[in-house]
Length: 166
Image 1 (tube, rainbow, N blue to C red):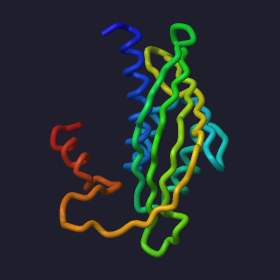
Image 2: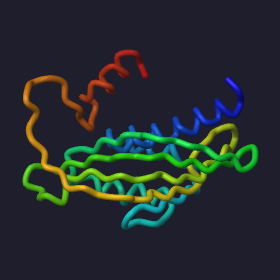
Image 3: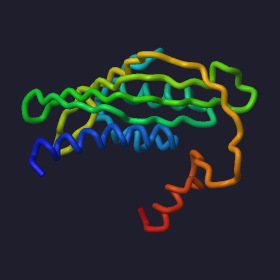
Image 4: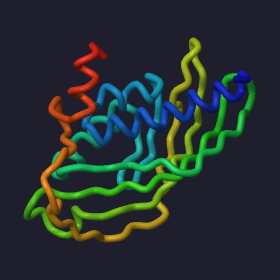
């Protein structure tokens, strides 16, 4: 794999790490996606990464879950250790029972990220979560019993990773 291909893979992995952290409420993973002095711009929020983590933690408390899907991803390099990453994202949010219709929605967005490699590690220096559209959703109970995602140590991914000491 060429150096640039490895860089692109590492940058995309930062975006995937962020999404996993948000969906599983693992804010240590979310924090790892940013440099210590990272900045975030979301709908309803502008500030540094620590302020963002406090804000997003409170924002997600009233939801039962989220699921982020990563789509198109493109990286433009601006020097050896700086890149602009654009990632298309669809994120579904569902509220707790009785939380009202505004808690249930899918949104289409783009993560426009200024990525920097520092000390050999790619991470977000500044992010713009550009919301393109939002659609209200109606959620129904699953039709059959089976594995369900949770936002704690009982999630199948967490159970499997713990089994192997990860």
